[in-house]
Each structure stands twice: as C-alpha cells, then as structure tokens.
Length: 385
Image (spheres, rainbow, N blue to C red):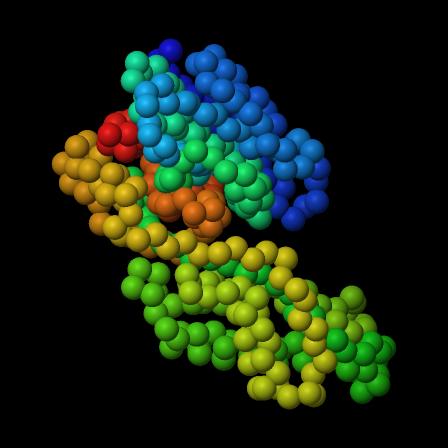
C-alpha cells in the first residue's frame, strides 16, 4: 500500500484537532484524528493501539515488527503530535487545505501534521519490506501543545526501541537540545476598601508593581547566568497579570502568571524556589505574597552528539541532501524530552519552518513534505543495518 504524504496531510488538516489549552472544555480534541490514523495503520496491516489520556483524548501507536533475527536489537520510534494551537484571528480557513504556489495552507500544516504525514508514509513503506531487521514504532501524540500529557502517558510503558525522531518543524535540521519550562502563579494580597477612601485599604496592584520590578531585576540576573553552548541562557517571562474588581474598589489581589525556560541542568521546582527567594530578599516582609505550586514542569532535552540516532540521521541527510545538517538547539519544548526520560536517544527533526507555526496563515512547502519522507525512509535503512 503506497501512501501519498501530501494527500495524507490534506486529509489531516481538514480534521480539526484544536487543543483547548486552559479553556476547560472536555471536547474530544484528537478523537477524529486518532480514528483517521488508526484506519490508515490497520489498512496497512500494522498492529495498532490507542492509549487513553482522558475522555476523547488518546495517543495512537502503531508497531511494525521485525521479521528477521534481531538478536535483541531495539528499533526506532517516529513520534509527532496530532493537536494544534487555536485558530482565532487566522486569515485563512484553518481547516481547508488549500495548495497555492507549492505551499499547503491550514492549521497544523506545519506544526506538526506534515511530520505525521511523512513519518506515516515512511513507516508504511517499511512495513511492506520483505526484510525488516528491527521493529519500528509510529507514535501520534495527544496534547503536545499544552501540557505534554500524551508523551508522559507514552512512557508509562516500554517500547521496543532505542532511539526516537520527534517530528517538529526544523526544516529537516537535527535538533539535539531544547529548553524545558516551568509555569506558575504568584498571588499578591492586599486589603480592599472603597475607592473614595483608599487610605483605608492596601492596594495589591501597587504591591504587585513592586513584585513586577523585582521579577524584571531577576530576569536581568538570569541574563548573566551560566550559558549552554546550544541554548544560551535561562529566561523568565511574566506573561499575564490580573488584578482588581472595579475601578472604585481598592484591589485586594493581583496575580502574576510566569514561565521560566530551563536549561538541561536545571530543575523546575528549584527554579521556582530560587525566584521566590530573590523576590523575598529584595522586597522583605512588607508585601504579602503567595507562590503557588507550578501547574506545568517540563524538562529540557539534551542528546549526545555521538548518539547512534544522531549519526544515522546525519548519514541519511548526506545520502538524500548531499550534506549533514549542523546540530542545533532550540528554545521551544517538544515531546522529545519526555521520550528521552525513558532512556530512548531522541532527536527532533521535521519538515517546515518553526517561524510558520502558530501563525495566522500557517503553511508548509510541499517540497519539504517530500524531502522529509525521503529522509525518514533513508534513516530507516541506515538505522536497521
């Protein structure tokens, strides 16, 4: 069964799979995508299962078994995600996969359904080989765009692989490191009073402004901290502030939502504690604040440049494109750091440009989809030798 990766991509873009993020909806986000991928896998005769994360949200896992003596050798996983970011303010129909000037438009076209299409095409072709020396796992993840719950679920069990390629838009360059992230909230408390008599209250917003300035100073301090050769330095961002009830009431609360990008040697919980210590040392006890436990802690990724998967991918790039890509680090997170936690050597490599991800007119070059399919197929040949 020969698949057309561009047609697969069109089919998938037309299937909405928007992550609800923090909206609290219980919609079955990836359900229709999971049904589609399972049908393709089963038509190709590939063993397939679904891992339930929550109601209506599932990973789809296909396993192609070796049919030659492997002497205990483990195989390769191809892994990418089914969900997309929201579609508000897009200037194109997000679910109409229009092709124009050799570009395919639509939400998820770049991030990351193109990776799924290319990976699935390569895996199905591998399943039809008469000689399969190692097992290959195709893993389509739920909930990558918000909390990575799909990848945490994936590693609850073992898979017959020693290496993994995560499909994200890297323009087919090899990424061996990326930052992690920790997100949390700080609540500043005040005392409410009538707006006509503010001296009887204590403004949480005024105190919150002092906390904001302390966070700005902490950000500058991080700018002089230890640097990673591929990732640079840690960063912190105050992404959201909420405070007050009405213009004529002294506000009794001001809440900050914060994220800190982590380097491979950093621990998320320790990062929050260090930030809190800095603020309290700077402001003393004059401000009442509460630092909440993080609602997301996600580790960074770092894979050795000498790892077998890095070497094999480099060989495949030389075969298909004439040159091996420079090893890179990126600032965003992926499912790769969780897969790596399971002892699986992991790299990130996929079609498309990250600059086109999450945009109002998201698209991918058709050429990149074909190149990725060739690269993944070549990698399977190199890795299985």
